[in-house]
Length: 567
Image 1 (tube, one colour):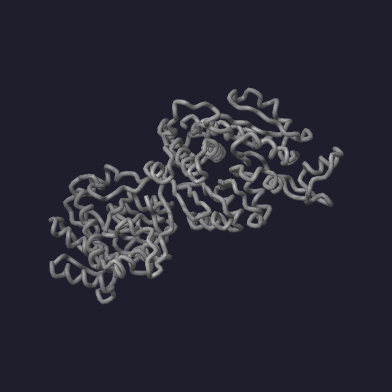
Image 2: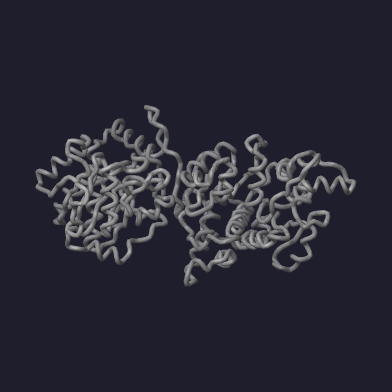
């Protein structure tokens, strides 16, 4: 399912109106009619997504309790702003009257403040004698209505709603009535999903033509309730048009569904297999992960790679740790790297790890690796493996970080998944943009804190614009970014972005990120393109979390290993 930014939607609207010749009135009429038809279906207790209306991926259906309220015989009240969003609501009022549903209108502002299109629609509803008044704070008797239509502020508004909108939004939320939002809940940033104070808390949102990015990201996804998408007369074929008037094409941003995985990315979530295949058909993953303190991270990553369907997995780890891992997962192969008895990666030579990739198809590195300890004096710039190498009399390696040397010594075509502590090493390097680009795919899997360190910003800045941050970093650095969290975002160097709807809060537990890295590595080894492996991996990871939650009394009891069992 395609999702768009507000400015992209405005460009598309302008193109349809000015170049195709569709009238503004026609688009508004179609939007208002769709809104009225949704309310009619809800009033009758019919499915909300009847006809051409789609439920956005990841949206829960309207609860039975809210459905019961929406079938009340009391009239609806439409809260109308001064812009086109208010005009959509006024059109809906006219159609509701035609359907025999009682309706009242409350205007947020005086009639002389309405925009041209909204004013035109207001004249029509007045001729039909539909009850209409202008809002006055603390005057409305909300108990007279059975439901609210929020048509106050559209996709173009930013920041905190001003008066009288702020007071009207607060009263609507406090009324306890079910609220249906037109296009986006008022007070919600339609691009980022960030909520102003106040913001409408909708039971459902009917968004027009295309789903908006803010409805696919939290907190917007929760505040919007059930999200439905209604056509209004903008042909889908126009989405990628580059018009003669140099209207830019719409950014390729998608909400992941099984159909999209199959039809656009060419992967099947069921992961079928051909009859005439063997373990060599499904690739070999090399996992470099784990230390004495966090060996479990490496084990989770390896087990997830196995469960992803790859043919073989080798776990590379510091030599001192090898004996303790023998037989811990019989299906795994083990490979040790000399560590001078330290038992951690800071004492290993990354060149020896690079040599192990010669007979493998993909490298996953980072889970449980730990932070390289700081040094002082003349050797402050040297990784520990170099200092120990000098002490052992085997020569001195170039003065560069462990990860930087690995980057240079890996075969150029080798796909790499970089996760967890390796991402922190990357951030500490400070000059990743200057590192040579690799022909092989590079997939970074940061959580918001790691993404903030990579970008040199605060975590809350990342969370305020997850799609924009991920897209910018991916295109600037030529990598695929998997920005983890609720509604994980995958972005590639061409600017394509996929937002994942699967998953639940129970997955907020240690080790689930290690599992995701292993799944993506396993899918890469099986021959999927890098972006397909990332997007499918995230989708399967979230779906496994949902299945695990469904087996338990509370999602909070999920542990990372539960996800592996559900793959």
